[in-house]
Structures are given as C-alpha cells and as structure tokens.
Image 1 (spheres, rainbow, N blue to C red):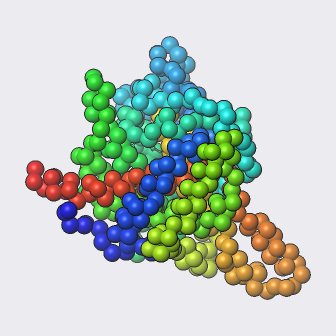
Image 2: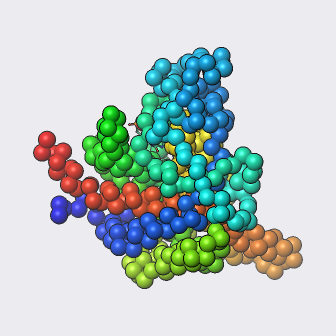
Image 3: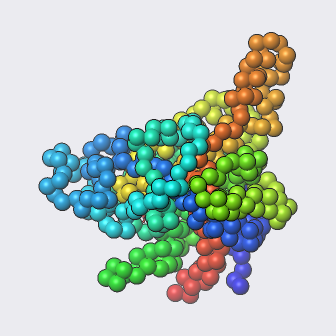
Length: 412
Ligand code: FAD
C-alpha cells in the first residue's frame, strides 16, 4: 500500500491516525453501519420548513416543502420572483425540484414510541415543538450529491465561518474557539466526502458513483481539512463513550422486540468494545477546555455561536441538504451537551461547590448536581449515532483513497 500521509497524534486529540483508522475499520464502522439501519436509528424527527431567519429575500428558501413542488413560475408570489441581489440567476432555480435533492417521507408509523422531550441548549430548533416536526426515514434519504451549489450554498458556509466560528491565526485563538472551528470544518469535510462518495456521474443514465477528483479538490488537497475530519470524529466518539452509562440504559423501544434487542446489543458492543477501550480509551480530553478565568462567559459565547449555526440550517436551500445539515448539527450539539453541559467527574471542582457546606451554597451545588444529570432525548441520540456513522464513513473513504489518489494526480 502507498505510504501513509497522516501519522502521529491527531492534532489536539488523544489518539494516533493509525489507531483511529484501525478501530474505525475493525470495530466502529461495521457496528455503526448495522445500527443505523435498525428502526430506532433510521427515523429522525425534523422541522424541514425553510424558515430562514437571516435572508428572508432568498427565493431559494421560500416554500415550505419545495421538494414536492417543481417550482413553476406561477407558484411563486411576486416578491419571490425578485432576484436576491448578489445571487446569480442560476442559483435561483429551486434546487429542491431536482429528484436527488428531495426528501422521501415514507415511513413506518409503528416505529414511534416517545422518549422524554427536552430542549437542547446548543441548538436553535425547539425539539418539543411537535406541530412543526415531521419524521423522515434516513435510509431512504442518503446524504450524497444533490446539485445544491452556487451562491446560496456558498453564502451559508461563508456566514458560518465568518460570523460564527472564524478561523483566527492559530497563536491568537483560544482552545475553545479553535475547537468550534475544527468541529465545523470537520463536518464540512465530511459533507464534501459524501458528495464525492455518491455522485451523479451521468444524468442521462442516472448513474451514480465515486467522484475522486472532487474528493481531492475539496478535501484531500488540504491537510487541515483531513485533520479536522479526524478531530471531529474523535470528539463525537468521546461524547458517545462518555455518555456510555446513559446510552447503555436508554430505552430503544420501537415496538419490535427483536430489532430493539439487536439495537441494545449493538450499542453495548460499540460502547464497551475491548479494542476501542484499550487502543483509544479517551479519544478527546474535554477537561482541557474552559479552564481559563473567563470560562463561563466563553462557554456562553460559544454556545450562542453554535445556536446561530444551528439556526442557519433553516436557510439551506435544498431539502435533503437541510435534513442532513440539521441532523449533523444536532449531533454535534448533543456531543457538546454531553461533554460540556454535564461534567460528571468535575462537578465539585466548580468554584461555587468548593465552599461546601455553607447552606445556600449547598442548595446551589445540589441544583448543579441534579440539573447536571444527563438527559438526552431520543432525537439527540439518533442524531449523535448517525453523525458518528457519517464521520466514520468519511474517515474510512479518506483513508482508503487518500494516498492512492495523490499518486494518480501526481502522475497526471
Ligand atoms: P463549498 O463546500 O461550498 O465550500 C465553500 C468554501 O469553504 C470553500 O471555497 C473553502 O474556502 C471553504 N471550505 C471548504 N471546505 C472546508 C473545510 N472542510 N474546512 C474549512 N473550510 C472549508 N451538497 C450536496 O450535493 N449534497 C449535500 O448533502 C449537501 N449538504 C449540504 C449541507 C449544508 C449544511 C450546506 C451549507 C451545504 C450542503 N451542500 C450539499 C452543498 C455543498 O456543501 C457545497 O456548498 C457545494 O457542493 C459547492 O461546493 P464548493 O466547491 O463551492 O465549496
């Protein structure tokens, strides 16, 4: 095999590239691939309306369910016909009219048994708002090339990077902001990898396959994007293993005992796999973050930025991209919630708790402890595992194609 390009420790993480590839390919990828097909993990509750709060004049994002509409001219209200200044006429074409961008909403109503519904402080959608939500079968809607491109897509990424997780010169950036940037960049790499993995190669014959030049141009050419993909993978993996007790006990009930037992057993296999526990016991060290004296304010600031990113997902002008964008941002929000909203080991290190047992401080400490109980809702668990699966697929494809494609490109 060609020489490895990425060796040593994944930047700002706790495991080596070689280890990540081997635990991914031997343990995590096979388990996750099976897990996400099971009923519990294949239905995702999502608000797919395109209620963009930021650019109300964007014609791409005006119809509630663009996927069932072919967007004929006469269906657009007058104001929608006005081109958005700065958008080219091409990007005004409703991407959602394209079959590959539409979400298939066929589902199996047996699969739903409620979990506790709480709101995630890291994301913008209120998950308890059931009237706004629809269920989507993720297996019918793979993340792949949709044809969503141009100014609208570019504007979303630009706004995420410029306003909500700017890339500062490394020496100026605190760990926490750097981590937020890396998480988003890693997710962006993963989305690009999925586009390259499953691309519409020939429209006339509807043939799909790998687009390796695209993989190279968008991801492999930039070592930082590959590094950030591995970082994000390890970050989410750490969240999953940190929440192991909770995830092991959670109720994976869809009304089909056989499938549900299988789900439970695969989750356990993943959480406690000996190879994972020995080769990469702590994929990311969250205790290093928020240590500075302005930790709490910083956490609030970053939480606000992340919520903004989550809100921007309502502006993604292609339904299927919006679906996967929202799922993965909720998955990241869930990882952030597990790692930073609850800190099982470090509760008593909080300054207020050090003065235990002064009586009113005791009450505050108890509140922190009780309020700190990890509580995830079903949709968060679904998003978390599906995100981990997407990242795992991306890491595998990058590892498989990474070195060989560079050889091919060098030879050309
Ligand atoms: P883009 O991917 O749009 O990148 C824009 C700019 O961001 C680049 O020029 C570069 O400066 C920077 N950049 C790129 N990658 C990284 C990185 N990893 N880290 C840091 N900076 C980076 N299209 C589909 O076909 N299928 C989908 O499922 C899909 N889902 C999407 C989900 C979301 C949330 C969004 C915003 C877009 C989605 N798209 C999807 C569109 C897709 O991501 C691209 O925007 C589109 O294919 C155009 O690509 P591009 O080459 O212009 O570069």
